[in-house]
Image (tube, rainbow, N blue to C red; front, side, top):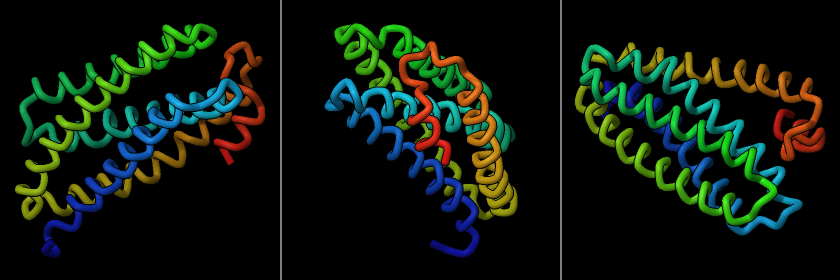
Length: 177
C-alpha cells in the first residue's frame, strides 16, 4: 500500500479491529455461563456504544462530501437500532430465550452494518490519495475520543446504583481499568 493510502488504512484498521473485538464478544456471550454473562454484556455494551459514537462523530461526517447522504443516514439508523437492541438485552437479561433471540438479532444487524461499512472502506481506499490528510486526522481524533469516551462512560457506570444486572463493581473496575 502506498504512502498516500496510509491514512485510509490506519482508519480502516482501527475500525476493523473494533468490529472483530465486538464480534468476538458476541460469540463469547453465546457460550458464556451466567456468571460470565455479566462481564461480557458489560464489555459488549461499552464497546458498541464507543464504536457508535466514533462512527457518528468522526467517520460519517468525514465522508459526507464523498458519500451519498442516504447511505450515511442508513448507517446511522443501523447504529441506533443496535444500541436499542443492547438496551433490550439488558432488560431481558434474566430470561434466557429473549437473551438468545435478541443477541441473534443484534449479531445479524451488526454483521450487516459491518458489510456496509466495508463498502465504504473500498470507496475510502480509492479516494485515499485526495483525502489522505483528512483520513489521518480522523483516525487520530477517533483514537483520542475513544479514550475520553471510555473514561466518561466508566465514570458514569461507577456512579450507577447497580440496578442493572451487568453493572457490577467488579465488571466496571475490570473493563474501565
